[in-house]
Figure 1 (cartoon, rainbow, N blue to C red):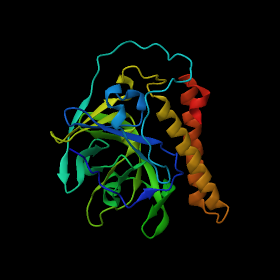
Figure 2 (tube, helix red, strand yellow):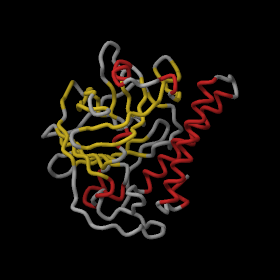
Figure 3 (cartoon, rainbow, N blue to C red):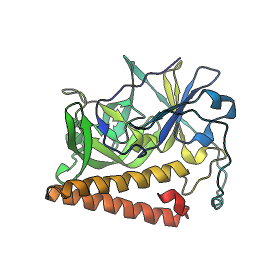
Figure 4 (spheres, rainbow, N blue to C red):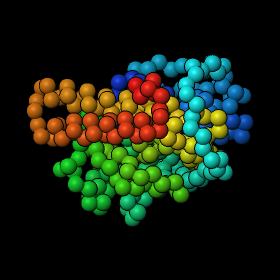
Length: 280
């Protein structure tokens, strides 16, 4: 069965390679799988892969797995039993909806959208959480009427099923006016290998450090590191382009935020001995 994910009219304004490709395949049991790491795809299914990319990037099909350039061996890790989190899904038309808990108490419905770079929450949700948007960064977004700037901030924690991620970036924007509904995007989902079970109306989230055979640094694969570095560098570039035309305290604050996040990511990469090539 083919899953049709909700098509969001709000798209983060990124260059084509900002978040790379999302690969989709269906196994012999009819279960649909999504991942941004092609190394995790079983060879038996590689001839029927569908690739979903950012706007402007042509679709492609995967050839047999090519030889990979050698990188330094990942630090050894103590073997742990594999685990995955089963999350129930609710259907609403072509949308798949989960219940998420933010900061331990605010429960909200989120539409699963692997094409959204950042999770989106409604203004009402931000108010319930007491988020201070005056101190939030601004991020360029595109709607049917053009490009605009939206608030980007973090929630302390986001829980979907039993899967919890700390310090999740969220955009505050009303995708459904009058309804407290948002999008579950890659700022949460990119911590997992995501599998959609269409027959059971369930989603499995397997932490990236549980992927067999993957080359990991700091518990994350190459695609995760590259996407993060590219995202923050792109935001710095976009904000500086705005600043070249107009100067405002909010834009200056946004540039400081993205530069700080980029510097923090670089420190984290150094501590994890992430190969230099993965940081671009």
